[in-house]
Length: 343
Ligand SMILES: Nc1ncnc2c1ncn2[C@@H]1O[C@H](COP(=O)(O)OP(=O)(O)OP(=O)(O)O)[C@@H](O)[C@H]1O
Image 1 (cartoon, rainbow, N blue to C red):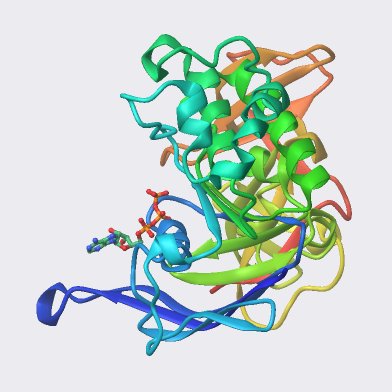
Image 2 (cartoon, rainbow, N blue to C red):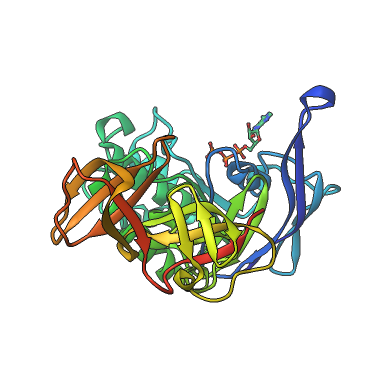
């Protein structure tokens, strides 16, 4: 079943403490897909998740599940009355119950025989009699996932579910989770601030900034036609810098670059956000250029951090050797930069 958000707004506090956390959020998380809410800290991801779970009351707008209203200002059922499973960052297993008891919690008594299957599905066979503190962080997250999914919820909400496990295990957990969710066709919303994680697991991504959806689409749609420079910067190695038009050039803190470095036309206006990639910028020795702050050796070539006198930094990648004592001018390759009207 698809989960649809229509014109959701949310305010915390009153008077001088009033804070608008969400404004006019509308999108549909398609049935059986994984939709990621991606954005930096404080952009409103958890608020939207908590409104869906019933941990917060919907003040404005409407959330529907399939053809039914899940919540609106006149109808805010408590979490236990919603067909929703929840997984948080720390797993939040019941500490006084064994892993088997945790997974069985919420399952109808007639189906509790399936606990063994769930233990197998999440790779915890043989650990059913252990208590949560006797498992590793990753194993606890697997148990939390099984507990949330065992009652067969129509929707699964996950808030930074892999954040507390180390990077190697995180990749495996993500992969296992993605496979399991796809197999079961569970409509899932996953909150993350990590673009790599969103790209790794998401069928769709809702990019959030300051309480709004900046863009909603598949990873390919976001890659091919980013709505803003910051959406484009989700993809590895991208940098965003400000520029102004100065005749036939773009003036930046790193120098003036010809309009021929643009991919496509310059949008209307005079101030722009430029999206550029480190491996599309050449590094030209120039005594009037920028100082080298750091050089990192890559498999082939070097990643160089250049710095202006005012402290602005730009990363470039080059196959030519770079001397830390030499100054360099960064020169973007023709057709390599995308320009967006500055907000
Ligand atoms: N209970 C609350 N009372 C007042 N303000 C709150 C409350 N909860 C969240 N906020 C504020 O609402 C805004 C959105 O918070 P929210 O937790 O939804 O963001 P987030 O994107 O999930 O952030 P993070 O990634 O850090 O968890 C922030 O400015 C936050 O300070």
